[in-house]
Length: 553
Image 1 (cartoon, rainbow, N blue to C red):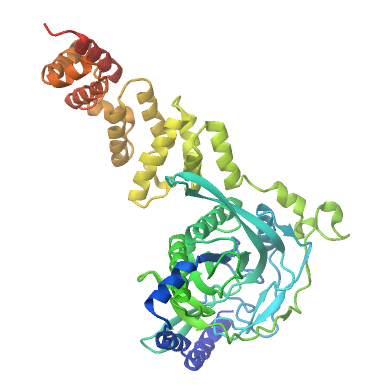
Image 2 (cartoon, rainbow, N blue to C red; image 1 turned 90 degrees about the vertical axis):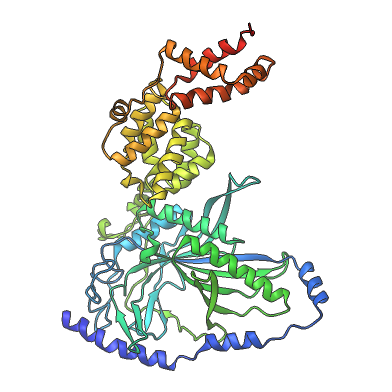
C-alpha cells in the first residue's frame, strides 16, 4: 500500500511539469488583446451611451460542498485535513489498474438529506458519468460525476439579508437550485516555482463532494454572500458538510454577467474557487463593475475564467473559455444506477434496508433548519427579526441565548441586547467562538438577575461583565463584593449628593422648574458620576424631582 502511494507520488509530478510547460500563456494573450483595443467615438458620445445603458448584474453560483464522511466517495480511505502528503491514498485513489469503485452509502444519504432540506425533487434513479480531462492531480484522467441524471433537481434556497432604508430590515430572497450531484474531488497540485517543479498530494483525491448549481437569480455580491452563508448554515445544521471554507470544505465558483433588463443575458465570466464569503461579495461586485465598464466603453466581455486577488481586490484572467475541450462525458461502466427508495415497502426482495437509502427515514431525521429557527425565535420570545438573524448566523449563539433565558427573569428583548452586543462584541474583538466564551450562560444569567432585582445599576452591570470576561471564573457576586459596586440606596447619603448637584447647577434647576423635565436626566447623570454608577436610579429621580420642584427661598 505504502509503496504504491510513493510510486504514484513520484510519477505524477513529472506529468504535471510537462503539462505546465505545454500550457499556453492565455492570460497574457488576453491582457494584450484588451490593452490594444481602441474606444471609438467622442467622449460625449461615450458619455451618452453610458447614461442610456441601464445595466444590471446577473449572478449564478456553483458550489462544491465536501461531504462530512469518515471515508471517501468510492474507496475506504480516510478523510482528514492537513494529514501528511499521500498518506490517505488507496489503490483506487491512485488509479492503479484493476481497482473498482465502491459507493459510500453515507455520501448518498448526505446528498439526499441536503436535497430534501432545499425542497429538491429526489431522483429515485440517478446515474454516474465519467468527465474526461487530463491533469496530474486526477490520475485516472477522468472524474466520476453525475451529468445526465443527478441525484436531486429543481430545488430552492430562501435566504435573508439586511436591507431597507436604514439597512436594518431583514429582506428575504429566493434562489432556484438547478441540481445537486455527487462527484469525487481531485488531488492537490503544489507548484514550486523556485525549483521549477510541481508536486502532487492525492489525499483529497476521491473525497465525496456535492455540487450545487444555482440559477442566475441574484444581482450582486451581497445577495450571493447571503445565499452562501444560508446554505452553509443549512449544511452545518444537517451535518452533511462542516462548511469550513478556510479548509476548502466549501468552494464557490461565481458566474457573472451584465445586461439591460428585458434583453438576453450577457456573456458571462466565471470567477473560480472563492474560499471566503467576504471575498465572494467583493469579487462579484468588482466583476460586475468591471464588465459594466467594458460594455459602456463599447468593448466586448470575454467568455473567460478569472480568479480573485484578495490583495488588490480585483479579478484577474486565468484562461479563455472559447476553446474548451470536449469533456467526452460517458456512462460510468463500473457503477450501476443509484437507487433511492420511498419507504421500506418499496425495497426489492432480499435488499437489506441498512444498505439502502430510504426517503421516509431521511425525512424523519431532518433537524430544525435555520429559517424555521429564526421564525420560532421571533414568535416565541418576541424579539426583532434582525435579532433572530444575528442569533442564527453565529454558531452556538441560539443555544447560549436560550440557556440564559432559562436562568433569569429578565425579558428576552433585554437579554438579546446583552447577548448580541456585549457578548458577541467581545467575541468578535478577540476572534473567538461562542463555545470559547469565558462568561458562561449561567454566569451571565446571574449578572442579569442581580441587575433585574435592583442590586446593581445597568452601567455597573456592564462594568462587572468586563471584569467577568477578564477574571475567567469569578462570579458577578464576587466581583461586586470585592469592588464594592452594589447600589447606594442609603437615603440620607443620596439626599446629600443630590443637594450638592442641585446647588451647583442653578441654570438646569431653573429650566426644570419652568417645564423642561428632560434636563432632569442630566442631573441624574451627574449624580451617577458622583457615585460611580452605583446610585439607585429610581430613588435618585424621586429625590431630584422633589428638590427641583421647590421654589427658591
